[in-house]
Image (cartoon, rainbow, N blue to C red; front, side, top):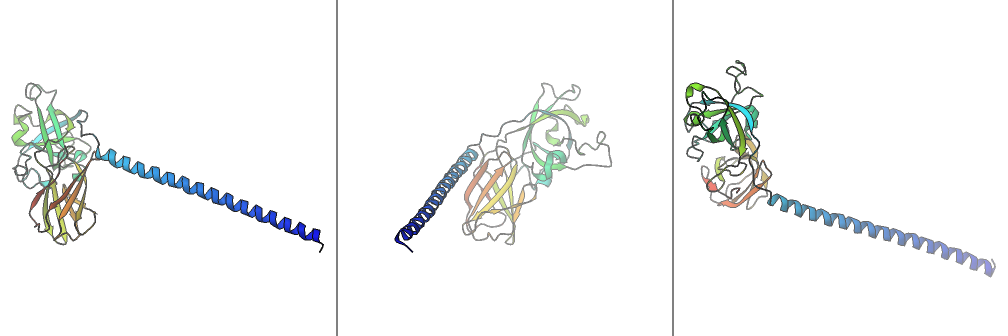
Length: 291
């Protein structure tokens, strides 16, 4: 091979090497840009998460809802029976008083609505409504079960899809002139629950089946999620047992307990270490309420 041929081969090799290096540099540059873009995406994602958390923390207070049409009746009982389907063993002792009602299944929502507050007015019945269109604010504490043996318009007042309030007898006459009215037309709306003190957590069950009754919830009043955290265990989502009784099989005995309540309006309230490590079943602890 001549000298000129050798120089030509070397030149071709250098060109190929330069080309490969150029390709390599281009890929590195693209890779750098991709990583950079991903970094920006991740960065913005973290900002979004922070913004979301901040927005959730600063959600507006629960506001009254629109007025709707329904009917109301009354039922007899006592402080120990007016809260049965929600797990409220004594509505007077728990601070609800007799200003309570059993809701038809269309409103009860499988117990989720327990603790929600409503303003009710008697309307369009001068014969039976109290004068001045007086209103009554009640808390949902029980279920008015359907009665499929009777027509929805004649005795089966709580049959789906009717929205109906079966009001505790002691306060029914705040709306109606006389119990003889039987059933009255009403308008109603959801309103914020005004509660004294914090959210209450009553511990029941046993070490292998922990139950918590959540009550005295302000704001929306309606609890849709409950988490518990021990000082030695992570956050655990509790399951709705029935009404506002929640359960978990997590081992919680001997730990201080923190609860996080999520209301139907998306707001959360975290009560840190409200139960000390030596808590006992049957005890009630007070946490942070919604304002």
